[in-house]
Length: 329
Image: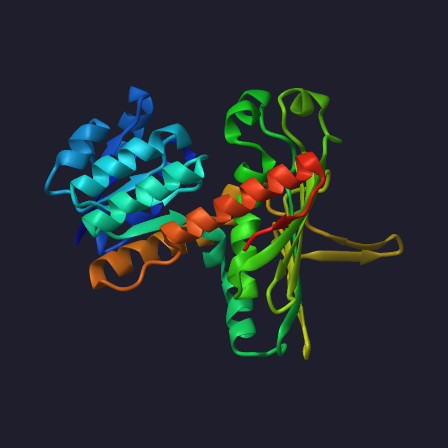
């Protein structure tokens, strides 16, 4: 039985706690949060102790930690957890600084502890199925990957100001998915971005609408489209075109009932937002983390995946601001 401490009892900590609650191979034994009411509520639900993050990290009976705290706290928590021999599950981004991510990975490697960057979308059943079909050459050689990701509405401006921007906060998921599906590292990147949804986002120094094109050494292409606004709901689609056909993963709807009448065809709305849309992915990624820690297998996505996605996000942000494409080699 793997004993896990949850650092951060907000939405994502609650999601992971729910998964652990239903597992036979792991359990949440302690939780920590700077808000006592949040920590107490999750502790009561999981029958866990409320402890400080330092107490959890230093407790020899706790085998692993889930880091679901604000990004600015990740660096110190990773170093402390690694030094205390804890397996680490860290929400993205590992840090907003590439150099600090590298320093975290040095600490993890030196300690020899398992480390997972939580790119949950790799574990979405539809996207994982799509990846398997690519690997099985169902559509031959991949030629173009198209990823569309649009939120129902922008987050609060206060969040925008500390998020690192649309490329590091939102598109980083899609940049990781691009690497996952292409099977090759991008060597060229071009980017464009605008502020079309809310002028306050622009005043905060960010964009709300962005596109990126990636190219690999063999010529494979990926197009990514992001928007902070979709009037029709949470839009998450992927299309992969290959030499022998095409694969497509469509939006998840609230139900599969479709109305047909003289006015045309009408289907249900999309899942409201990421917690609902990716509920199964969150569950699967935590199961993967626990299984790998227990078995001693290979952890993916790892710290290197987190670093490479951050490098792409940085390059995309820079390219959008100066209008110049980037050579990534």
